[in-house]
Amino acid sequence: MKYLLQFSTRAFLTILAILVIAIIISRLSGYGLYTGIPAIVALTLIAVYFFNNPKLKQFAFTIWVFVFVVSAMFYPFLFDSWGGFDLAILIVPLIQLIMFGMGTTLNISDFMRVFKMPRPVIIGMLLQFTVMPLIAVLITSLFSFDSEVSAGIILIGSCPGGVASNLMAYLAGGNVALSVTMTSCSTLASPIMTPFLMESFAGKYVPIDFLAMMTSILNMIIVPIVAGIFANKILYGASAWLKESRWLLLMTFITVLISTGLILIENYTFGIFAPLKSGLIIGFALISVVAFAKFVITNLLGKSGNWMDKVLPVVSMFGICFIIGIITARSSEKLLSIGFALLAASIIHNLAGYIIGYWTARLSKLGEKSSRTVAFEVGMQNGGMATGLAMNVLKSASAALPPAIFGPWMNVSGSVLASWWKRKEIKEPGKSS
Image 1 (cartoon, rainbow, N blue to C red):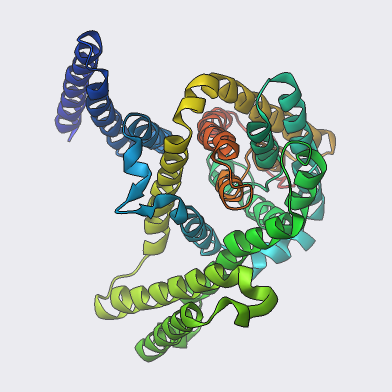
Image 2: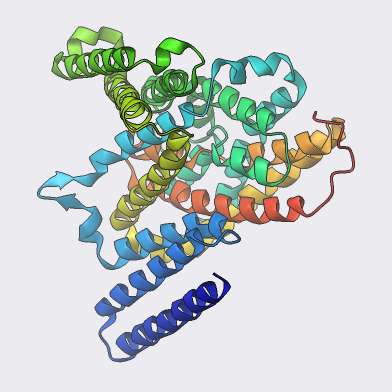
């Protein structure tokens, strides 16, 4: 195995060197358009190598983002439309799928845990919905971005914590239960807080429809998460009937029937709930998929294990990458002109969140584990949610650019910080808050 790994690394570096030479030759020969092919292959090779390397796996997502960004920059038609079908329509369903995946990792106890550890949750949420949007406003005043990009920066600062913070808290030796609770609570507060903050701080840049943004968050984020919580019960519930074939098939049939019925019903029939229609359709459809998959995998094939926990992260990763590709294809020229400035803005915003989150927690007498957790929760926002709102509510690919830059950077910085903290001994092992 040792020699096989060495050979694989040697082969990887050899192929990578050949691809780099091909990139240089294509650039020097004046065939710049063809540079994209070896560049995409090289980045894909690096992403696969990272994904299969335990020490580098946590950075694989960022490399995959580069694969899709480069693909969209060189060949934007791949992310524009297929056979007349506008791919931008897929953004909301993909985010709903990602949020459903988040829901499958949650249960009711994650929300109830706030009563056991209220202080760190309150500290984190206050910082999340005050400091982060205010820093975003400050950044827009420091950089000369146009109105839509400025609104996108404030939007990412006004969003709740991202689910990636839970992984980072785990890697850093933080309080994972607290992280999950904080993400859950800030997400539940987002239908009110995010539109309010956008109306307060971004209204001078773009028109903000409070009600439209609130219902979009409910449809795109909350409804799929609730559906995911039901799926969690189906997957991991202790009740004996949840393992019986007849009940799994019955749930599959009922949820397919409901999802199909919702598609056929006219929007006006829903009344005030019409904006939630797509979320309900996706939610019930995915519950049916989970129930049927459990029937096949557990009852027919006799397999066990947390197979959903392995599938959904990969699906979510490629969903986010594809969304970023769609946004990049629509704003490639602007990205070339302001990309480095946006990266600088994301670094400032993200780093300020980590520092303020950690030291506010420490000054509030929280333990080291909880302080690390608060740092990740404050510093890492839900980029997928910001992207969906930018495209679906603000109707602006330019406003979606900041989330497309901020999101991958947060994963890079979070991984680095988590790795650094993991090597630092926690001197108060008895404390968890």
